[in-house]
Each structure stands twice: as C-alpha cells, then as structure tokens.
Picture 1 (tube, rainbow, N blue to C red):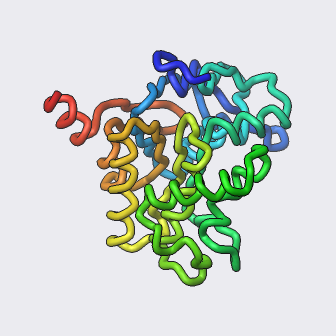
Picture 2 (cartoon, rainbow, N blue to C red):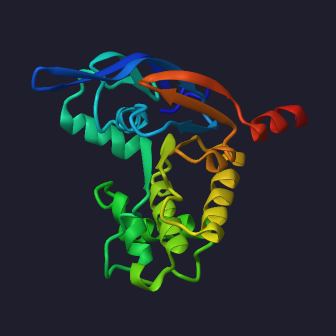
Length: 241
C-alpha cells in the first residue's frame, strides 16, 4: 500500500565500499536524501562520482555497505534476493539507455512482459499494455517489432513497459544517451508530462541540459552529494504556485 506522506526514496547515510583485493574503494561516502511522491529528480555526476553505484542501490540491484535505504517505506538491507527481486518488480519501473527490448517481438508484447507473472488474465495484460503505449503516444505502433521502430520510439516502448505495473517510481538511467536531439526532446517531454500527472521520476544523467528538465537536481562528486537544489524549471514551477 502506498502512503501519500511517505517518501518513495529515503536514503540515510548510505555508504558503499567495494573490496578489490587489498584495496577498499569507497564509491559512496554517506549519501542522505529523500524523494517525495510525485517529484522529478535528476542525479548528476561525472564518471567516478558514484552515480552508477547510487543508481544500483536505488534500483535494488545492490544494497548499501552501511546506512539505510528505504524504498516506499521498506528497508532493503537484510532482504534476500527473491524478496529484493519482488521489491524491484512491484515498486520500480526501469528505463535504460540501451532500451533492452526483446527483438522480433511486437511492442505490445514487450510492454506486457512485466505483467507475465502477476497472475493477470491475457485480456487484462493486453488492456494495460495498450493503455501504457497510448500514454507515450504509440497507439499506432503496437504491432511493430523493435527493428521497425526508431530509437526514440523504442525508448517510448521501454517507458511504456516501465509504466505498465504502476510502480512507485520510474528510474531512468541515461535514457536519452542513444537518441538524437529530436527524440531526446520527445522523451523528455513525456517525462515532464508524467511528472505533471504525479509520477515519481528519478533520472540519472551526466548532461546538464537533460537534468534541467527535472524539478530538482542532486549533484555527486567523489561519492558525496555536493549540491541538492531546485532546477530552473523547479523554481519556475514553485513561483507559479
């Protein structure tokens, strides 16, 4: 059950250390922040800043060495792999730079995939997939295979797949990295629209012009947060209220 007043993300002094032989690599050095329901947050950082490590922890693909990470109120530490997988599937919709669509499979079937093990009827799976595709403007591409779609259209199918389970948040890792400027603008416009509808979005990027579409920007350097502030768009939204 989702609580409107509980943060989707609650990271408290999160630290991650990797042991490489006798060398300890401290990828995260005490990261603390919250993301409230409906926020659109960009996490920025150069290579080696810790943003990929943080993304893996936020996505329940890894767990902190120290500190606490609560996803939608659930502490991920101490959760076994099966339960962690279930937590990912129920609470997070992933969007990756490389789309990760199944080749030679229609768009609607790609979008249905996360619902396969949810115990839903075939008709209900199809209805939800069609609704998700409509939300990203692809009602006319439902029967197309990935090879028949442009890069921007493939990423929109991936976004529909992320939305189809109605997750607590969308976690997007460099979602425009393989797109041209026109497709980038289309995908970012969808993120903005979803945010305006109350979706929680966390976007990982190294591009400031992409991060500017979020309402808030968190900047990492050497495993620490060095800035956490509203973007120009976020300030304009607040001023308009």
